[in-house]
Amino acid sequence: MKLIQSRDNPFFKELAKLAGSARQRGKANQTLLDGAHLLAAYLDAGMIPQHVLLDAAALRDSEIAGLLERIIGVPVTQLDGKLFAELSELKTPTGILALIEIPQPVASTAARFALLLEDIQDPGNLGSILRSAAAAGCDAVFLSSGCADAWSPKVLRAAMGGHFVLSVYERQDLPEVAKTFSGTLLAASLQATHSLYDCDLSGDIAFLIGNEGAGLSDELLNLATQKMTISMPGKVESLNAAAAAAVCLFEAVRQRM
Image (cartoon, rainbow, N blue to C red; front, side, top):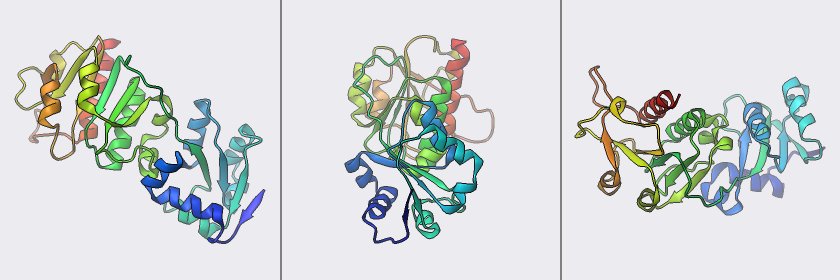
């Protein structure tokens, strides 16, 4: 096992760039998984990391030891504690990071249960939506170029492994995706006359989810084949984007069951 103690180490410099830059992650097609849970989810999906990084405390952790037994042959490097903390955004680092290649979904027009996300900019919201989509059994999520970086550490943590069971398509032309989708496109609208709970969600469907503040653009809203409202008897006018997506997804799950 190699040991890195200097931030002048070339490999550490590359890792630091990946941790802090969406541009670098896109250029290298790599990202970092932070924590045992994310690495376990990645392994459970049948994928193998390129490199594993540990701090000294990780060597005494039984859960991490179990993960290392699953990836015999993968390079492992120990980092000085301060260097490890620089790569992790957690206040209390978990002791293990994994360098992975970002999965690239194959081109597909056969999605049957999908999300189209327009300019979801908060990493926590995006990660929560991806987690809900994975739990609901979605087969594809399409992100506009205005969305947060889907493979950033914050989004990965919020999604809790959802990335690894979804086809995540970034930087998509959502109007074109909508035009080629063969099923029903549903969008929430205050002007709609039908409730989500009155819609038939049993066939091929895609929900259109808009920006946290501005909502859906007129162009995308006009492409919806069905507009609906989410019933809110309480004294609020709208839901958080992640909450609205979860309500829509699990109403579809209820109907499909």
